[in-house]
Image (tube, rainbow, N blue to C red):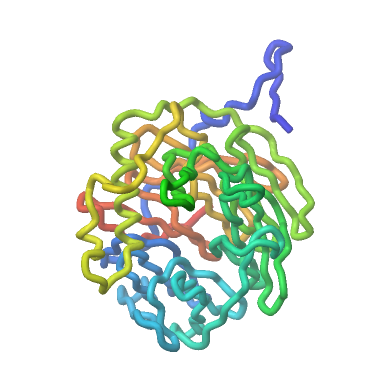
Length: 380
């Protein structure tokens, strides 16, 4: 459903990008020690914050009041350990799970910051019909949400048009499909090899025109549509409520954008490179991506930055808008299920939202050396 406003008898989409954002200027608190690549945070009831640094492969418990941080667990494959922590998943009773991708397991963090037991889930895609997908979110009950595979395998392997968002409860034999998201098929390259078989590469298109999504606290899903910028709200029982469309400016992909995208891709590859194997240390990766497909680019950026959508505990969804390469100010569109697009919020330069607590927003501020600093904000 498109949002319309009357103007001399003509209906036009609402120009939300012209709305002046609320500009936040000073954080409530800041942690003094830097991080290298913060992937997720989780606020505990006592105000302390769990922080997962993907590049350094550590999880810290940060106390803003004392200015100290305590290591949570350690790198390894034993009980309470993790080899490549990817994301934090809030669970009930102030517990948290670290998803350890290579081991395909979740390591529990108790409310006191100590790692305990672990568990595995047979996370599959398409309501449990095909294996694959990576855990991305959890809801208020601790159910885990995944996005399905970007590949279609029948009748032959090909790039998929869409993927299922599937919700898994611990102990259940299969998941429930809550929503579907539209993918950008140009991000996938499938080649037949001369010696037989196929070569598959994913993520080769920067600024992909595809949907983003987040799981909601009540077990539903909010899907941010790229083709016609709006939010679709799915209830826990998968009933869809279509949000109103928001008009956006067209932002050209420039040479600076392309160079920045290549640097970000290299940084992501380095953070995912296994340690301890000769010739595979992050510093040994080539800067020219030898042997890998070259990135491709659309003519214009999508309305929002993929993977930067964040949900508040009250159900608000904050979407990071696309911007020019030299624009360092992050502006978020704020959506609610009942009110649609309700406001825009801007943070200071080089500052982006990473997560929310009960009454606070947490951001990462980037300094001139590309080090990241965690900050806490009071949000109206």
